Amino acid sequence: MAARPGYTERLNDLNRLIHTLSGMNDLLSQESDEKVRDLLKTGFIKQFEMSVELSWKVLKSILSAQFGVELASPKPIVKEANRQGILCKEDFEILFQAIDLRNQAAHLYQDELVDEILDFIPGYCTRMKSWINQLK
Image (tube, rainbow, N blue to C red; front, side, top):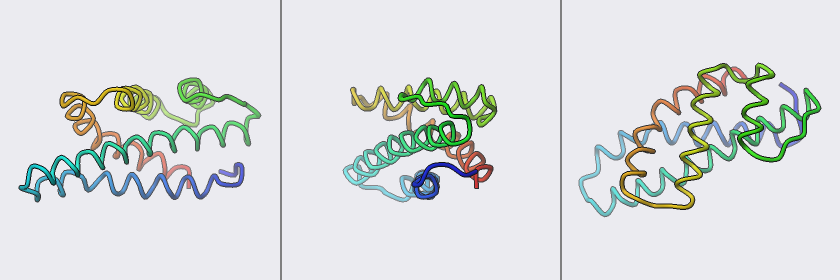
């Protein structure tokens, strides 16, 4: 899909982030030091946040370039991308949930939320890989 300059770079960056997140469970299962595990978890949460940001910004570029739709915030952009058929129902639902989790993580850091996000990431990565491959 053609879009604004920067679209390809954002999509490539998103692909790299998703690939890194996909290996999260392997790294965590190999690490026995609790302090190191906590640092890894913090890093994965940050990567997750960045991937969510890039996801909706990629959608924003597509909506602008292909449909002439100019929106500024994540949820309306994801809703419009779903309406335009850029996202299937499953991708829409997981990205919408990811935005909610990202928003919570940005304002509140609790162990329960960290665990919820870490549990969410594998399914999120699976859907995002599929979506990214469709966009390439």
